[in-house]
Every structure is written in structure tokens, then in C-alpha cells.
Image (tube, rainbow, N blue to C red; front, side):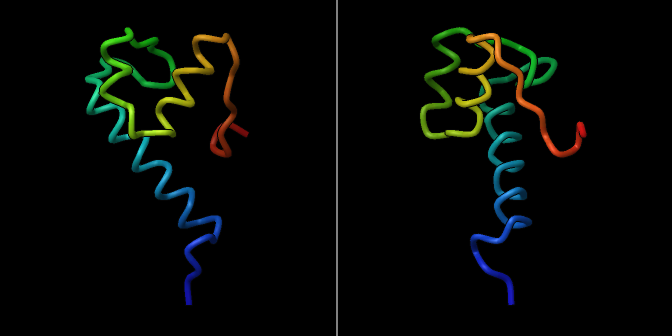
Length: 69
């Protein structure tokens, strides 16, 4: 039985939301590297994962994912 809060399910949902944010905002390269304009950020108002990535880019912080370890 799979639990809703298991690490695998949360990771999978987060990856889906990040991909959705990238498509909604029409990022050319990667939402992890491309800083979006304010009007593009408004498109992501309900996508917390993508907004968090963009906030960190604006602050100059780096997010390390499990894949990068």
C-alpha cells in the first residue's frame, strides 16, 4: 500500500509540478536556470515548486536535487 506522504510520491508530484511550471511559463532552456520576468511569474501563482525555484534564482541561491548528488 502506498502512502500519500511517502518520499517517492511527493518527489514524483513535485517533478510534475516543475515540468508544468516550465511549460506554462514557456521557459526556453530550464526553469532551474532561466530567470523569469514578473508577468511570467504571475502565470505560476498556483505552482509553489516553480515559484520557489524562481525565488531562489533571484536571491542567488542554489538548489541541489537528489539527482545532482
